[in-house]
Image (cartoon, rainbow, N blue to C red; front, top):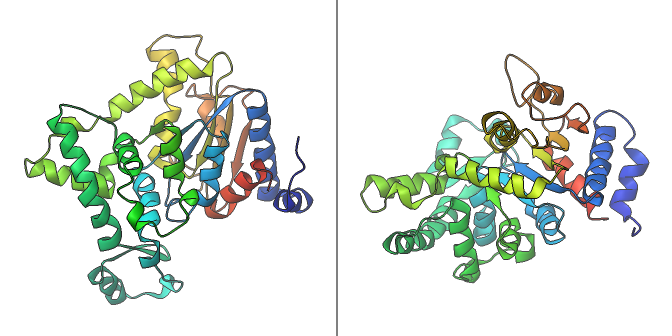
Length: 325
């Protein structure tokens, strides 16, 4: 095994206790999982694409350290938005101090705020809209249907966006995924900006909802993928944040085991969640991993880690460790 670089050495030297220890334990567990020939799912919630996680995630994809991704519709599109409109983004470090009037000013200037970062509507949303609509329409006219991520792959691989690139394309995780044709699951895609735009075309009678493959079809695709790839080893589950990006795919195992009565289906064989959600009143995102045993998702012996911290800090460090940086 190659010698780890300075980032990894720093983590091993200093991260000894509490969430820091959980971080290094989870990273080593992830590495062991891959070394045993098992595959890994990464789920992306929150605004991780806007946090530019692509800088590390794209290399994870290129080096085959993730075999399938589940993400929100926002993360699917926002990585591409950053790729084509980065210079038009605006940081607002004093976002905690903004008045409602200042927030309204941002809206009127076409700047949609995500914590301390504003996404430029015209250069990001509308720039993508013009090109993706043509791909949607062409598919419909040809009687073809695709998943949301497959349409995005067509958009990226067509080269039509290259004229707009504003970051090094090696830092776009979606471009890395498209080049590998990496399987992606996008539950609840409809609540994303592109999902809203697609719905608006349907309302206007310009497109049919059936042109876009559905969430049920994503679940059946994932069921087949899990069955084909888990063997008797199971798949690992590395969850960034909470929400539907994690809840949707993790359910495939109990569905196969209980509803399909395929009792030889292996449980998820590694589980880690990075989350700052607290355990309270029915919060699934804040639930400790052992709760998932009762739902038939994890085994008693599944390695389980929870890192209660900010994913924008933690995930790049774990990915850096896995990449030997």
